[in-house]
Image (cartoon, rainbow, N blue to C red; front, top):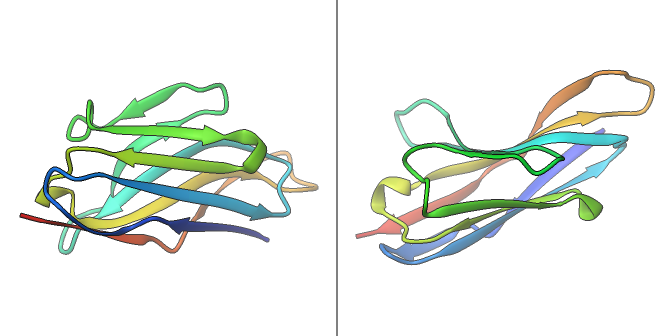
Length: 121
């Protein structure tokens, strides 16, 4: 079993900052890509940022220059630093990781339960 647990969400005023964390635990052999997604009410889930084990990062155009993804491989943890937050960033933020478990040659995707980020104007 693999668990992803997010933390760090909350209510912040426009222009403020938050830092999200997501820690993976359980029967883990290796983790490849880790990512943050978000889903606002009535909208489809969208990818916000991704990072590979080698450190390659990608960002959606809507957050580029404001958000920074990072990871600590030793702690199996991924972070999302969010600066200059806007009301349109309001969403549930979900962590995703591609994890290889014992006995399997493949990576499977796991999701956290999500953490709410609300940005007031």
